[in-house]
Image (tube, protein in one colour):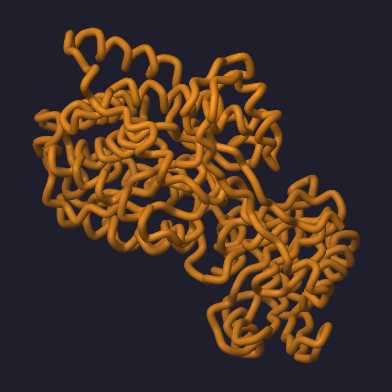
Length: 494
Ligand SMILES: [Zn+2]
C-alpha cells in the first residue's frame, strides 16, 4: 500500500462497465492497422473515452507514476516516435512508466500505454523497449483493447450478478479474490500475433533493430516464472505462447531480406537511463516480517493471522485464509472520520450485530460486527465479519475481515485478534528501509559473467543479476560493456 489512495480494482472495472453500453448496435468498420473490415462494438470517440476514464485507476493500481521525469520523457519520446509512423497518429497517446516491480506492459483503448519499472529493469537495449512499446501500440492501432475490454466486461456481468450482497463486501470480495487477474488484459493468440507484427513494423519504420523484439520475448520467457511466483499474472500470462512468437519474429526478419545492421539496437542508450532504477519490491511501499505487515511511510502496522497468504498491492493489503473461507483487507477509506466511514458502511444493506466508537492502540476508531446475506433469488452464502475504521493523521483506514457465517465461531476470534493488531509503528528502526537499485558498471576488462558477479557483488541473488543482464554464467563479456549490478536494499529482518 502506498501513500496515495485511489479506486480499487473492482471500482475500476465497474466504472468502465458503466461507461460502455454493451447493447449498442454493432457496426462494421475498417480496422485502421490491418485495413480489414470487421465488427466493431465501440467507435473511436467511445474508445478514447473508455481509456481516458480508466487511466487514473489503472495508473494508481500499478503503483502510480514512477518518480523520474527524465525517464518518463525518454519513454514518451520513444513512444511518440512509434505513434508518428503508425496508422492512428492522432489519438491522445500517452506513455507511462508505472512504479510496480511486476514484469508487465499493457494498453487501454484510445492510446494509453503503460510499462512497469519491473519490465524496464530487465531490458538491455532501446530496441527491446521500442519492441514492447510497439507491441502495445499495435494493440491500440488494431483496436484489440477496445474489443477486448468490451468482451471482458460482458464476462464481468456474470461475475457481478452472481456475487453477494452489499457494495463494500461485493467490491472487496472481488478485489481480494479476483484481484490482480482483472488487471492483465487478456488477448487472443491471434491478436498477440498481430500486435507482434505491428510492433515489428513500427520498429523497422523507426529504424530500430527488429531483433530487439526477439530479445525482449526471450527475456520475458526467462523471467516469467518469478512474476508468476508473486501470485499475479505478468506479461507472459496476458501474452501467451512466447516460443512461437520468437520463431515468428525470426521468420519476419528473414522474410524481409533487408540489411538491419545500421538499425539501432541502442544498448548503451537504454542502459544509461537505468542507473539508479529501483529493482524488485520497494519496502517503502510496505513489507512483511512474517505475518506482520509494516508500512514505513504511513507508520502503521497490522499482523495478519498465522498461515494466511498475504499480498501487498498499491492500494490495499489483502490476506486470505488457507481454505479461502475468510479474507481480510487493509485499505484507505475515502472519508474524513471513522464514524462517517462506518455510517456509510452501515447504509449498504448489511445487518449490524454490534457497533462502537472508541480508541484502539491510541487511534480513534469506529467498528462493527456485521452479517450479510445474498439478495433474494441470488446464490451465495451468508457471511459475517468485522469492519474497523481508524484515523491516523489525516487519513482514515479500513480494516475489513469476514468469513462464511457457518465458520464464525472459529474464524471470528482469529479475525478480531488480527484486526485489533492495527496500530501506529512505534519503533523507528522499521522506518529505515531502502529498495534495491540498479548500479551500472562499465567493465574495465574482459571477464566472464561469473567473474563479474564475484568482483561486483550484488545485494540480490546471482540468478536475478544474470537474468537482469540476460547473460549466462560462463558467457564472456567484452571490456567496456555496461553491466547492471544491484545494490542497496535495506529491510529489518525482525
Ligand atoms: Zn500483447
